[in-house]
Image 1: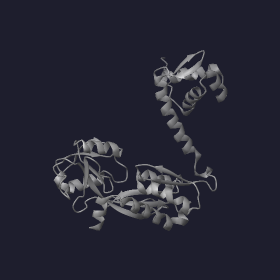
Image 2 (image 1 turned 120 degrees about the horizontal axis):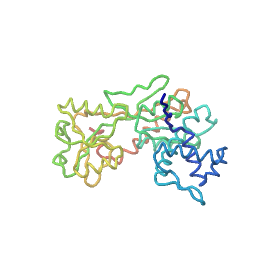
Image 3 (image 1 turned 45 degrees about the horizontal axis):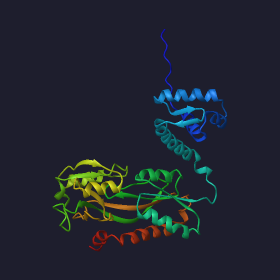
Image 4 (image 1 turned 90 degrees about the horizontal axis):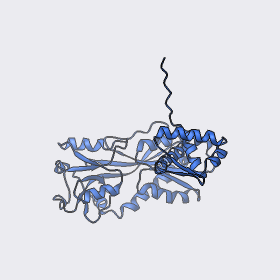
Length: 316
């Protein structure tokens, strides 16, 4: 009967071996650190290198140094191990009186709350975690990894955090459109979404909380299917694509105008987003929710004073 060798798969212990070799610069020292022998560790490294498909370390009498492939693998190994260590730490291991953990969507409310919460809590340390996914942030609050989070949702695609989570609105903000300053429509003070039916769009990826589904729904109601050949996560890339004239982009009303880029409101506000405070009723901030919500609203208000397009919309 013909036999087949069982394929070797990478496990966390293999990643820890690679990091130990890199950190100590020697298989002998790494073996001591890991409580094994140098020959056994060398055999493990060879098996990992066979799985990866190349040498991960250059070895000589001076020690072991990562190859370019090794550096590539080590970067990802450290990311995986760091995430796993954080996952295994668990809420139960949190020391009493430890830092308050605040999460949120990238933006002014999260940063403003971090600055203000310390004073509210008598100088207690406040840590922050930013992410683009509202549902992930809610899950982290539900799992007690975060004490509270500021997330967004969209009218018609409302986020409904599952019990026992609680939530309250903080602010509302319409979705506008960003165009190159030389765009034929840039001179208009206000646009219908249907005016942009023939445009190429740059969109941020799905956030799991209703975007870009709400945008596509609004376009459908305006009579067209948006052509979106560009995807970008960060605001800098979106700004560059728009400024170059390659595409237009839906954006927050608080998105800053700059040289070569203008922000225009959409008539009738076909897209409206809400900023929400989400918290766990047994979390560290549950007793302070009214004050935290007020601080969040104040952080947003302070920020929008420098955003004339948003102020014009609010005044209307």
